[in-house]
Length: 65
Image 1 (cartoon, rainbow, N blue to C red):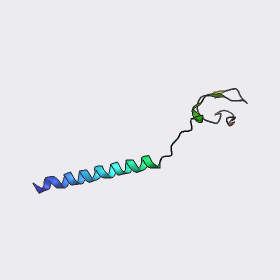
Image 2: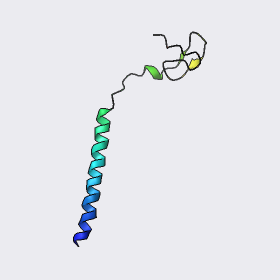
Image 3: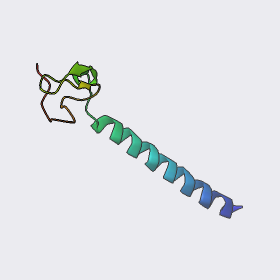
């Protein structure tokens, strides 16, 4: 009967460690309220319609502000 509780306690400890690691990771991620990199814009140099990001993938021009 005592051998039943050893794996149970071990698995509960593993679950607690996993939950703590996930909680700590969530707290360390910076809050990204900046949606500027999600706007579509047209590159002034080459005319490419950039759908995501702040830099043109063809001519590497930064998004004008």
